[in-house]
Length: 388
Image (cartoon, rainbow, N blue to C red; front, side, top):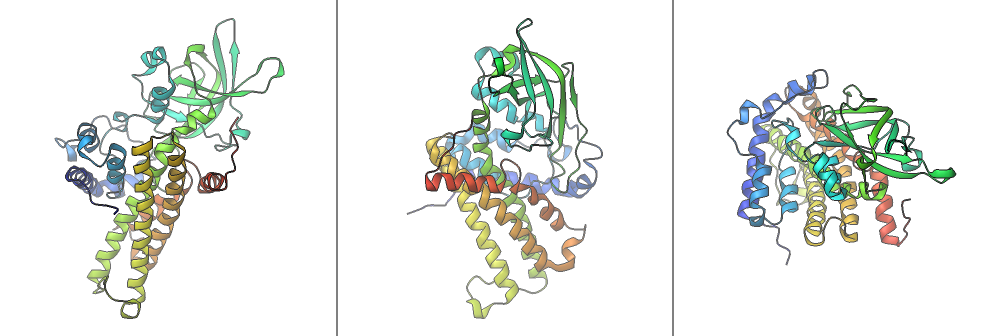
């Protein structure tokens, strides 16, 4: 029998996250208006949560009392919409730092391990399509350095972090086909220029910028032992988390919609059959059912990661399923809730329209939905193609 009950520690962590998100909600509207004009430089924590324990630091200490570290983490991300970063983002392990931890040598970890490193993959004319990437790295044997040229965009928190791990094509010798290389870039290196903060439709608290590399010289020791495939394998962990974050916004919007319906005298009856409930209630219940289905795919993926590890074949496919379904369902749920709420949903007195905007990106970043469906189909039908 499948048991979906949470441990006492699971529930405590979820409650802590939900409480912290509620404390940040009063600041959400103003931040949504201004953060991309005046990017946050928060160091430390917001006064509203001073003295409160960091739920994710607590998770690291008590994970043996949970259903599993990665399972509890996903539950926490799905607790409710996280509209405001009340803690310094630089306090968490950055994505590029994860790549360094997984594929860096001991000497590289000693050299760069203290830095918060973003991940730089996407390019203006290529997106994340490896065949279209134009950033190049050329080895200079006289100085034992690589010279990098190119541009990267849509980089999370690069404006706050100390540098980035980036992908570039390494020029082959004597006309050989270029291969992908993964390099550590540190801010302050001559020729590395940061791009302005980007303005977006939603998730405005999630700061994005980019950088230009113009004859950037870095030591050969800054090249990690990771190609395109190895570097992107780290996205396996994050894909269900992207779905979880979108589902958190959906959960908050569903709860808000329920409250508005109840205030209007419309009761959500889970017992009545189709003939015994209104069309609005039926629509709402179907949206909740979609949320629960997507929740189940995230939980299954994280259970497999807990049991088999992030790089297992079984987990990779389930991570893609969770990402593809979660992002699709998030768009449907938020759209449906706004239709139920009517014109009131567009009022800035509430956060309903913000949650609608925030989830639109979920089907794009960390691997677009179409790409996830290709990966799923390859696994189901046994068709494989190795990335070169």
